[in-house]
Length: 182
Image 1 (cartoon, helix red, strand yellow):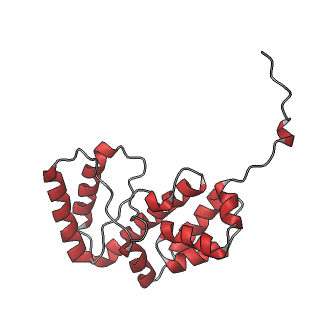
Image 2 (cartoon, rainbow, N blue to C red):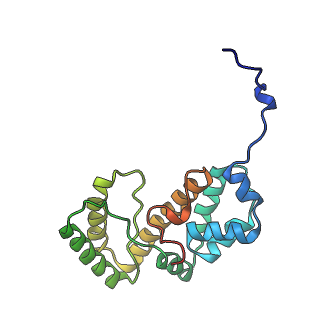
């Protein structure tokens, strides 16, 4: 069986990428997507206002840079929308209890949810990493922890944006993101 002629590479139709759609989206739609990923209105607006971006890496660099300018109130807003990473379904109840206790101690000391970027860590290792992170970061003073939490938040937001704008998913359903409407 023979195939018919194919178009040369230079004549293939251009299919819009998720970044193309983001760049061309109305301001309110772009802002909503960013808000789901970044959880800060000021942070989201700053990124949306600088569209179009030539590539995902440029957008991620802009989001990372803008994160360094977050005020304490902006950071608090972004942290308030975060939640702990989901644990694998087969995690023992004792582990849930340990995580709940560690998180309660963390939140009591610092006044916000514990955030940690787990990246591509296998789910089976995430509980140990989260518990280890909470325990080690409980030794930080509030200013040290604010810096660490802001860095983890930047990494989480960058991961969400990369996932969404490379076409792999939705910011609102990425790890550590709250369910839509929360």
